[in-house]
Image 1: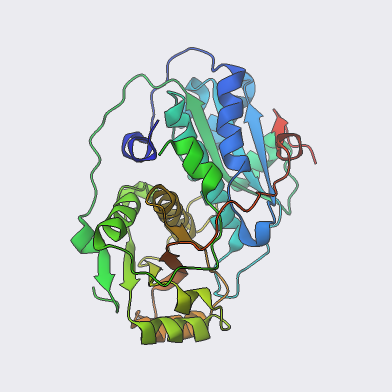
Image 2 (image 1 turned 180 degrees about the horizontal axis):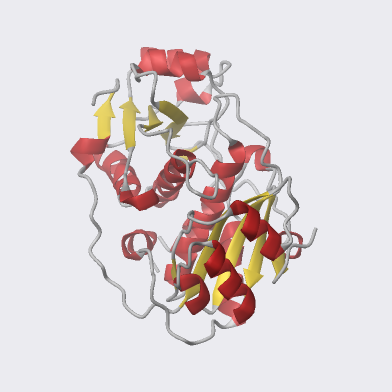
Length: 171
Length: 171
């Protein structure tokens, strides 16, 4: 699929078909994360592929009951394994690195006919516990992955005029 | 360009041709950021397109003299306009949102035959001052954009085995 189409078609999918995702498609999605850039090419990340229904239900409960985590056949948890590293500009590198890798996965998923949804509303402590993630690491998102029931929701976005300025900051 | 090719070809470009970037290509890159997802679709971001040579030299100095900021004909500064928002999992939403938008730009740049380089080593204070960014906002990156002098550096990445685990975290 053309990059432009993948960017245009990517949307937050909340309803998933009850249909397993072929291994080959999961690997393509993970490969997109693998190729992502990271600060100083550290690649301080792990991606946990969760398919067990019981574990997905637990993750759903850890995310205030968000049903898509239990309904999607796969959940990918993205874990930062060096969350203490801050770039000299003051931005935490782990959040940027993991966001880029997960973004690559969301686009690759579209390319595979799959849907995803970035989930940031969950208990860090409970997610760590369910997935056995050490306390010094950080779960950045738990992302459902599966075949979407519906697609094509219109994108509501600000115009370029509202978000772009030239040479200097303007409100 | 196919998404897969854009992901594969994206690299950190440090040497740029002394050749302006057509307006139309810059707009295509910005459009990819515009379409990016953000937490609760807040889109709390601004992208400052810097083409003035003097300003790019100042940004280069604010980034420990990194020459690509002065050499590339365009620098795009990505600014978070709501840096205080933290997701309930404890991850700062602004860093994730801006990383996704900038990642979209890096891929769209490849599609346009352009190169970029994520820069995180710069003085937040000086970058804000040069670009007139209010103190309560945050510059997440200042990214050079231009025609690359060389491409095709091999990607050095961990294997999937090193970064993927199943059902539960494993070192």
